Image (cartoon, rainbow, N blue to C red; front, side):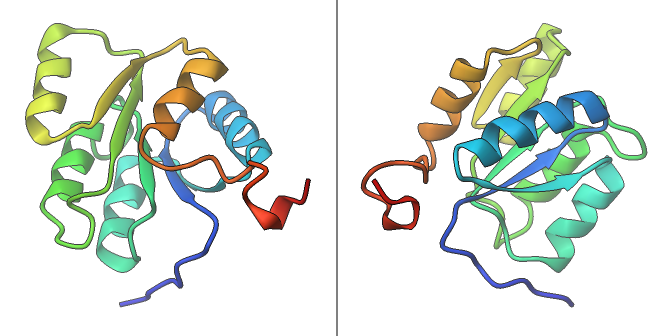
Length: 141
């Protein structure tokens, strides 16, 4: 089993199948100083839960090819090293039943697409600090 070293920079695992959304989210987060890892589908995301140390936070789309986001969420919540990681669902699926199932499976927050950059960052910062702050010596003053 391949393990990765934990970085001092907060890491976000983004599970998103649409390239345009993935590029936008990566740009927003990396500009704030987060490290972003990307899984383009549910199969790759589930594999990461089995082979790597958990990130600091997961951004999870629900509508994914190969394995649904709800199945990925179930895998995250049943993997001991991953079970307490904040999972923010970021999806266009606004059906009440999907939101209820995601909540019941352990989603920490549920954000609807389209999203604003400000709301995305504020939600992430509820769970992990923004590394691009004056208190962080890696970024200077």
